[in-house]
Amino acid sequence: MVAVGLALAIVGAGVILSGFLAPVNPGSTTARLSSISAPNIVPNQTRVAQISMTNTSSGYFEISWSSTHDLSVTLYQGVRCSGPSGYCISGPALVAWPSNTSGSWNRTGPLSFPYLLSMYNLALINISLRGTLAESFTTGPNSLPTWAMVIILAGGVTLLAIGALAVFLGLFLRSGVYTVPESVTPRYAHELDRPGDPLDEPFDDEGAPDLQGPDPPPTH
Image 1 (cartoon, rainbow, N blue to C red):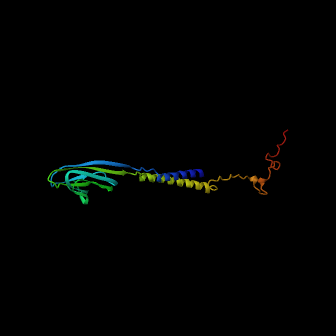
Image 2: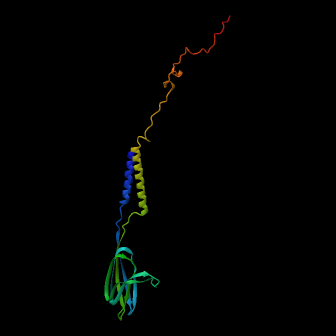
């Protein structure tokens, strides 16, 4: 009983420990590239391009662009709205290039898309813009789901409790519940010390009464 209890307790402790030390997937890094193009922006025209990539709590994003002539370019955070595109500018500009032919910007940390790239043509000629977008982020780490952890821990605790109970019963109740009772030897009448009891006297045939009666008379 004690050996079985110790074995169950060890298995239960091992199951609990494995639940806390379960291997965790360290995750993997994902990199994505995209491009943006805005051809033939006419003079005094504002064109807005929507940049949508992967939202993440921790990542890296970079935008680089170039144009055929000086161009006013501004990058904003976008939010959902009832506008024609479904998104509107939110808050101040993330970065602005007042009159440039190229530019770049990056951000590390939480990324929430879309971004809105506003391009305004200050010149008297049509201008085209081309750009590249890059994003990288790490997915994971992946651990056991909560329900699986609960099942593992519950099983370990149950085994540990059963093992502890078995050890307790085996050690402390050995002289009680698990003791084989002494055999009871039946007592007979001739073993009892009762002076004067007729049953203690040996049986004597001579003192027994004659149950056959008197002899029959002789026949002539």
